[in-house]
Every structure is written in structure tokens, then in C-alpha cells.
Image 1 (cartoon, rainbow, N blue to C red):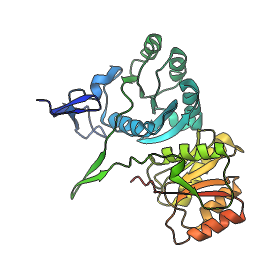
Image 2 (image 1 turned 60 degrees about the horizontal axis):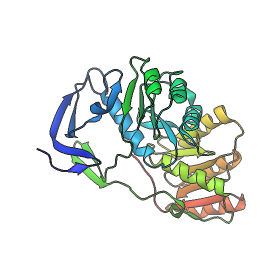
Image 3 (image 1 turned 90 degrees about the horizontal axis):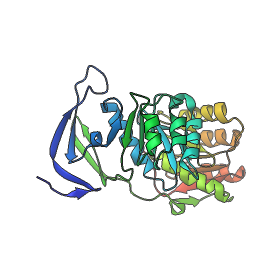
Length: 314
């Protein structure tokens, strides 16, 4: 018996689907769908969708929903490892791959534009678990299907939820999803020097990415391409060092902007950024040392922006 229509999908009574296994082969797992169509109904070819595949696609689509322009995200273990926006999806994919080719291996490619033959040829040059997009040209699909195990999903990218929930030992946690749009109204200049318009665009791009990285999280970017990502670290300095290591390995002396999902509590991080040539930074306020961070930015002629909200993701 149907209940209601959400995102174009008819909601129905719970439908239980057994999976091959859970996060590891020794764990039994199943999937419960509340809709007439589940993720399995969008599969065009490839091996069976796994527990981990579902988690990765979920994370990737939530991040991709932040972007309107042609954008490619490569997901690894629910975290983006390369994100890029560009004038067309072919360029966006190449930039997302170049962000971190090593981590891209075995990842999941999620795109918000139709896949053409040129792009399909590029994708099959490397090993990926899945390709997810809203559409595929006929010849592009045929080319991708030559990779027998490659999972291909033709799925609407604009899936939305208004509630987040997680299961814990103590019960289920529920919260409103953070639906506040990230645009120029999301940041406020707190130092004296304004950032160039292109750098502001990169700040907003980076904030859309950092929102979907596990905390502590840092994003370094240039021209709407991630150059270095630091995530899941237990302190913000190590998150930054991890991001800088990737940036220095693949992009060397390229200039960049930096955003953090939480405030820098001390000047060590912003000092490290300054030494590495970054002069445009965004972070939330809230530290007792905010004034020290602002003073450092002014003294070193850096553009420092405070975000109106923090973007933690546990």
C-alpha cells in the first residue's frame, strides 16, 4: 500500500533486501527500502551492489547536490578524494582525477551530467568500482559495459532528505539536515584585505566540499579543483599537514585557498598556511583566540573570512 510521493519515488511498506555481506565478508547485511524503487532498480550493469557501495553513493550524491555547474566527485570510503567543477563534465572529471590519482584508484565516480563517449573512454583507463550519473549516451554506456564488473547507475542526482538520523547503542539520533545554501552570504570578511573574486569562488567551492568531509576537515583548492584534502584527523594541524602534503606532491607551487570545517584554535595552522603561500582562508568563529587569528591575518596581509556556521561532520 502506497503512502506518499518523495523525490519522485513512491513510498511503500518496508522492503527487505539481503546483501552479499556488510562492511566485511564475515558480517551479514541487508537493505531496507521504503520506496517502490530502490538503488538496485537504477543499476544498468556490473556486479552486485554492496553495503559499502550504498554508503559511498549516498555520501557522494549528498556532496554533489551542493553544486549546480558540471561537477565530478570521486569517492573513497565515504569521503571525496577529488572534486572539481568546470565548464563541461569531461574537464570536471579530469580535474577531479588529477586532484589525487593515487586515492582515485578503486573509487566511485559520481557526476551530475550525462556521460558521453569521450568521457567513458577516459573513465575506463583506470579502475573504479562504480560510475553514477543522471544519464549515459548509448555508445558511452556500451563502452563502460565492456568493464564487466563496473557497476553503472543511472540515477537522479537531486535526491534530498530533510532529516538525518543515526543508530547508536543508546537509541536513534535525529537532526535537521543542514540545508543552508553556501553562497557569498555564508562568509564575512574579518581581516582588512579582500580576496579576489576568483578566490572567493574557490572559497565557496571548498566550503561545499568540506561540509561533506569527516572532521577534522580542511580543503585546499584552486580554480574549483581540490588540491589537497585533510579529513578524519584528531587535530586540525594534522588535517592541514595531510592536505598540504597532497598539494605539494601533485601541484607544487600552485597558489590556493584554504577552508576549515572548524575554527583554527591557535595561530599554528594559519602560520603554516602563510608559509606555504596561502593568503585566502575561511573558517568559522568561536575560538577564544579568534582575535589572535584575525591579527595574524591582518599583519601578514591575508584575507580571512569567518563562516556564519561551522560545518562539522562526525
